[in-house]
Image (cartoon, rainbow, N blue to C red; front, side):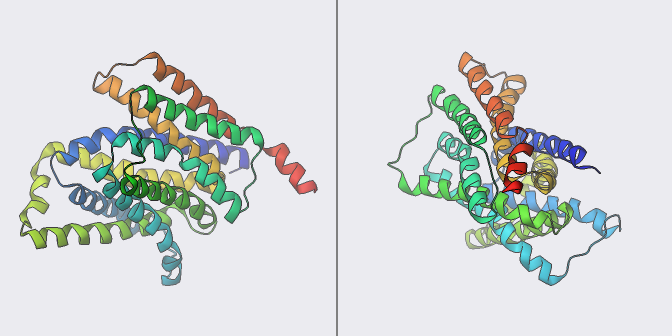
Length: 310
């Protein structure tokens, strides 16, 4: 596959990734109404691991990982899903979703800084300004919706900030690993780690509270299973595969900014599915986000040529 075609597929993967993540918030709302968030994570990663293991077990995918390779990938899984979800879950206990959304929107900035520092990615001034424009669009939407952001809650905000840093760190660490391992290999190891950690946490919680039956009770609800299927197969397994593929062909800073498109998808999903109203500030914010994403991902071949010439 030539470079231009692979990059086109990488951009398509990034857009699909943002679309899946954007709609996942609707399904998260449905699942947490039926089960404890830790149980949802345990069920989510269990189903994800089962599905991603099927092609490996049937021999459709050639498994090339050794134990030494798995140990190299484990830090990636610790950043996301383990620490990312844990910091986010506990941060939301004392914070609100608006604060989480605003902080999550800043992830591309941290990704750009980390990518420049650790893996020496180069970006132009136009790309940096475009990235800030996209972030500004997300924050503008949250502010116009009346979202508050209070620094009085240092613990909650601090945990959400750590979650954002883990998300950014994941993108940077995954970039060099995608050159060495296949997306399916990275996906399986990170999902397996999430399966082990979240199931252990959920079972320990139920054992201490004497509520072991509550762990499996939601699985008898068809609505819960449907929402769980989306979260496990598309939002967890699918998005991990798509982001790993995108990072194989695109810089971490370029892929990261696509996460801001998830905000637009979430708003569109709320309007189309739940009938939520759209206002002028939604359209203004959408324009800023899209313009920022396009600017950040503009052709950098001239930049690379200048760097190579030096």
